[in-house]
Length: 295
Figure: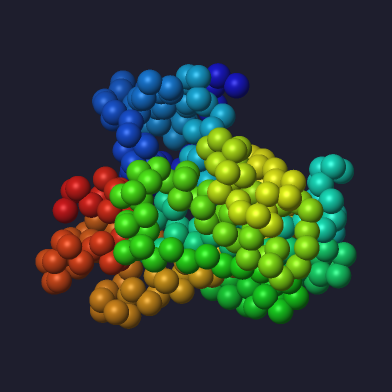
């Protein structure tokens, strides 16, 4: 795959531009387009018509990240009572995260074990990729998951996130650590031979982060793994916890904390910085984002 194209609403221009800025791309003017974003691995153009094009050697990975960042519609699982891939066992752990593309709030990684005893319950509760669920309904479905599944939720609040990121200087290593901890925590409660997560970075990252129990598990990473009900359930628990973190920050700082990495996010960050200090943003935000340097 050396190219990717799609049609996006033009209102997503600022959000999409922010994604590429955070990915380290150089943003330059482009004829008949909002801009061109370029790195050594790809070139992306968002045209005035809404057409979006990526070309280069790293297209598949960056295209998946763009779709995830924009929360665009994904294909749902056809039969949530069984895995789409016949090689995936019925009893499995799904792992997913929330908050990695948001300037404010925690990074949350969740794991959920499903088997024949709970899959139909989750299906009837409406479990699917959290991006297809209105935020106001997340907590209701999350409660069903917690009442019927073995699960683990790892919350890395901004202060701890910034501390870890300053040491690792790599988001994928931080994600791998969180995924591994979620899997290990579940295995302490119940045995399982297989775990599935959405693909990010090198497949060996999570495997290398696993400890004694986790080393025995078959671990697989797949693009768009949230089409599997176990990963979808994990995405819901992660999203619910992330939204809780955003709500807590809103109460603490007396301002509505926006999600994502938009112009509204930048203005809110400036408000908090002026009222408290720029240093205080280390307790609310992921300071390696370009947004922080713009304050």
